[in-house]
Length: 191
Image (cartoon, rainbow, N blue to C red; front, side, top):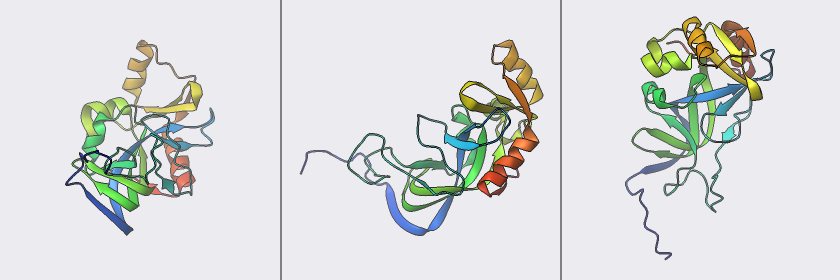
């Protein structure tokens, strides 16, 4: 015995081939013309979720265990409720995700071994932070340095510009959302 005590007692872990459906937020990157779209985790420098490929969790702590592990925070994260994502740092896209393989359920959601989006939609991050799903739909997508794409409604584009957050290029949100859904071969997230 190594003397470590698990702080995760009581967390349910299961292995399933049937997917668990949950909610997730992503950052979005792409070229200045809106091509080569990639969903990226909003936290850290994790690997992007590549189109047509199953996302697989790995432990960033270089620990010698399979992800997710009940004694670690590793895994593909998703929530039970979409409103939990309002606390997310810099979300650009929301969606329902299918999770499977080894799945750890916790108070706010899940951590899983494998995942792929099922439904996707762009959000104005400022509206979502303030009003959740009742905010304005994004009208444009701003292209920023490092190929970051940020969907914004018109009022929040004006606010962002006042505070020095000026995109280098503006793209129509409906075109980017259509490209995103076509790229990942998923359906529209309808509020």
